[in-house]
Length: 344
Image 1: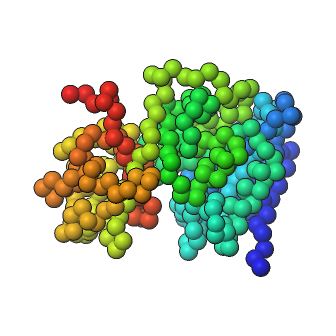
Image 2: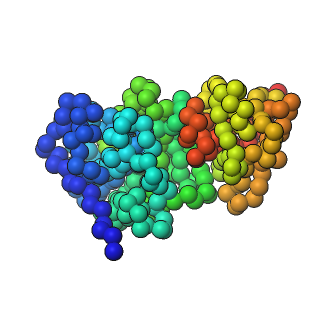
């Protein structure tokens, strides 16, 4: 029988070292911090660093703590997850430890390996605490505006998301993420703060933590419809099994993504826009299924003069300039544009 993973308890009275890099090295492993709030009857949870290459949340938490841990509106439990992945050289470059599963795909069975046991430990702490909300801070793999992701679309989640950003993605896709598992128990929101390594993303993460900690009531009035744009069930565009991806045309790969693909994040892409060059297998090198598992590649995309282009106006999300992430996770997400978004 494998040993359970322990989340090390940090002392809120013990400030971290001067730099986030020194703090990362000093952390004993996956850790949690319980900060007493003005209202001790309520508690919220903040999770960060589920991916070791997404440091904005950790940087913002470090600055917030170094500033003296202002008293939050409610008790606040902070969980710092993929510490080992984050400090695997080169620092903040590994989504997960080499040879291990992505932690944010491990919040459903099987749980026999180290990431699965860590996911179980995180869920056990959350269930024991019963928070009124869970906020999961991430970075995107490429430049992007900040946005939120939820598995529910209701007034409560729209109000929650509108505290932090102008875009909300609602998905029925279940990949084993924390958001999937926790939503059955507590209102849960993922916030993507922007591209990893972008100072603006770090600043946005700091703003998110400050608002989350200090706002007395998270689920206020429903925001005006023109202030929060909601996208439902974006589709993942993935490589077919055995297909090869590159950003270098000289590689003659099955899919060569456009060098400037990240500029399309939250952009409206139209038929004729070139998103990638296709190899000898054409569209057969790609797979796109909706949240029900139905193949939709031919509905969304076309091959035009050897290039991949939208068949209809599409919003594109989470494109990355990292070939390893695009190949192992997905090239990007897309959602058909609403009629009012399409300008003739």
